Structures are given as C-alpha cells and as structure tokens.
Length: 373
Image (cartoon, rainbow, N blue to C red; front, side, top):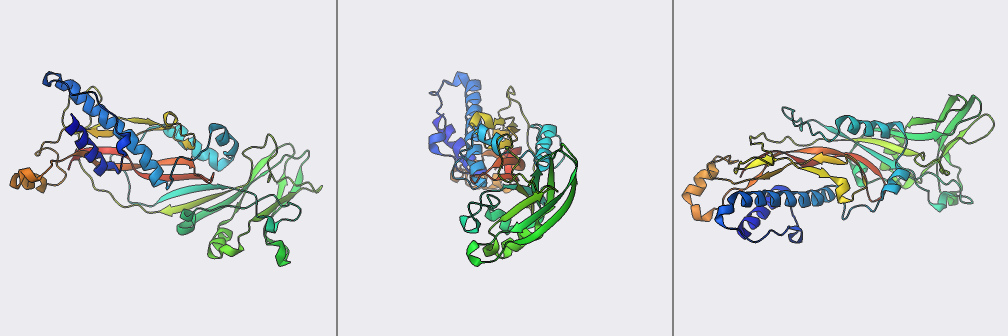
C-alpha cells in the first residue's frame, strides 16, 4: 500500500503540479489480499483527497497568490458593488449553477477569451488634497491589466435620488499634486436628466483615459467626481455613508487573452460505485465554502473530477511508443500513470489581496478525460 501511495503522489505531481508531502492523507495499515475491493476503494479515496489538496494549491498559484486573501463574508457584502455589471456576472452563475457542460462535444479552447476586472475606487494621495478633499478616487491596477489589450473600460458612478426632476451636470476631473500650482483638469463631462425619487448608476467610457495612464503612469493621481443638480447638491456617491455600502465608484475593465489549443484524447467515465479497476475519470465536486474561502464570490462550487485506477501497459497509453519502450526495457520503466489527458478551465469571480474584484479564467481546473501515460 505504501508503494501505491507513492505512485499515486508521483502521478498527481506530474498531472496537477506540486502537492505538499505534509498534505498527503495517511492511509490505514495494509490489509490482506482477500480485501482487494477495499484496497481499490482506499486508493480511489486517496486520489480524491490528493486532488482536493492539489486544487487548493493550484488556484492560489495560478492567481499569483501566496495565501488566500483575508476577506471575510461580511467584508464581501460591504465591498461587492450593487451595480449592473456585477449583477450580470452573478446572473451567469445563477443560470449555469455548478455545471461544467459535461455534455458538450468539445470545448473551444483556441479562440480568445475576455476577462473582466472590477477595480473599486480608493482614497487618493494626500498630495492632491486640500483640507482632506477630495476623498475619492484613486484606482490601483494589477500588472495583468497593464500588460494585456484593453477592449473596454467603463467608469461606474452611483447618483443619489433627488426630491424633484432635475438636470445633473456630471464631470470628471484629473487630479494633480497641489504643489504643481495647477488646477485639476476636466477630462469628461455629461449632462443628465434625472427623474425624482430614483437613484441610478451612470457609466462613462474610460478606455482612452486608462490607456493614457498606462502610457504615462506619472500623470495618474486619480480623479475627482462631481454630479451637481440645479440646486448645487452633489449627488455622486464617492464616500459612501451608512446604508450606501457597495455604491462607491468603480472601473469595469475588459481585457483579452488567447489560450493555446489542447489535444483531444479518449478515456473512461466511472462513478463512485463502479467496480472498474482500470484508469477512469470519477466525479468530484469542490465546495469553496468547505475550504473557508469567502473571497471567492462565484462559483461557490464546481465539478473538478479526478483520475484513478490501474494502468496496464496495453491500456489507454497516451503515446503509442510507450508499450514498445517497456517491452525493450521492462526494468527501466516505472510504468504509466493514470492522469488527466484533457483538462478545461473554469471562470471565477473573486477578490484578490488588494480587494479588487476579478472575473477571469483559470486554466486546467476541470478533468475532462483520463488516460495512462
């Protein structure tokens, strides 16, 4: 059994990446030969537990996180924007649930995929403030945004309700250090007709401004947002008051990435009650709430699947020459492993360590097919 555990670990190391030795679950002592079905079940259970540990480390590694962001469920409720683009993203998960489209003939992993990143406004540097004002808005951008192609950038602003219908003059000013002796520069302005008694979200195209910031980072000191009605009241929610959580300004940025095409392969599908001993794909649902990962907004769970089973040299080998190599030198070959031969990505909506909301694709997180290699 100990040799079996080591072989499973080595196979998973090749298939999924590093798994800490301390994370390997311990198995009970070896049983007699007459309990072979139980030994098979133990091996399968061991593969499942190792797969869960691998998923944890893979997600953190692929998101470039050293550790899970320290964001509680209460903080998520406070920071999550109550805005149309966020609701659209959440609605996608309400429709899809935790289904990974197992029935699809083939995933399209060649064409470009779009990733959405939502960056919430923070307080600007004191060098641009006079008497602590303005209190908003500066945006912190991850390197991923700055190095990819920007397809779309929208600035979202929430306007407080007015007692009577009025005209609102919305303007965006580029902040500059007070020491420069120059006034803030207006970069966007908009005239809006607002009905009485209703609050609203207003979006403004921000792509050109964002691109200019990336070309000249030294000019990005943030922006000031004003939305004055005919009575001179500022309706823009820039520093949320009690009851206005989730209404602060934010940037919605869409970037494009082109993944590589993956190869097709064949494999067996089994369930937990299957007597199959050969290499097979088994169902496994990952629940992030069980991990205590409140920083993942959606999905809360997904179908990850895992591979387990024996690999005979004539069965489902990934490369045709593997069997010939073993026949020529049987002692010099450790034997094939039951590993994923096709994996697909998952979409995820999450907070990073800077409390930015990211909607993106994490590659190779779902086992679609298993085989021996």
